Amino acid sequence: MAAVLPPPFRPQIINGFAIGGICLIRLKQVRPKFLPWAWGISSENAAHRIAVEWEAEGEKMHGVYIPRRDTDSRLNALAGGRIFPGIHHHARFTVVETNAHYSVQMQSDDGTTTVHVSGRVASTIPPASVFDSLHAASEFFAQGSLGYSHTGINGKFDGLELHCQNWHVEPLDVDAIQSSFFEDATRFPAGTVEFDCALLMRNIVHEWHGRPDLCCSTEIEA
Image (cartoon, rainbow, N blue to C red; front, top):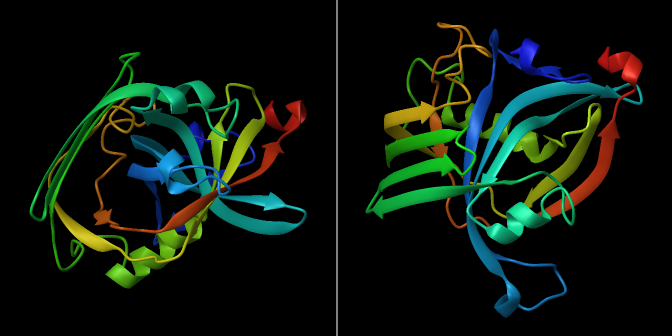
């Protein structure tokens, strides 16, 4: 995992393992805070993310590095990296929800990224998970509220922080999972990536807050 992270990030280790994931997000009524609900837009989105640590002013920080964002919103794809943080690639999403079963498939327009996750709401996380309990998994991912996204400029990362009014996760019993990013053998040789668990969050009231860019010198990048 360390090999795919740019400076100053390093993998955050949990019970001996680095943690990567795909955050599949349906956003509803997204708008600037000063606008009424009627102005909000909705979209399907995917963010590939890696749990990381880094140093800032002598303090150890925790969050996520996001090498790739995809969206079905033309507006998000146009504005991402310009009006709001993070480059967004346009993609097609197919979402099916029936009772407690969820299925999300994504194919990016540029043909480089595909995702498929399918599963049913469960009562516990898999017993082989690196997390000791659902509570431990929930606490870990809650720490990843601050994210820095790839910008296309070496050493510069867009900052975005998630504020949730109600944080609640449920485990998913996954019956299908596929990610072209994590299955790319040029990034992760065979046997170095293993599925751990999937978590579901529903009806979460939240806000996104832009944070100052994180920049690294060319000496650090070299």
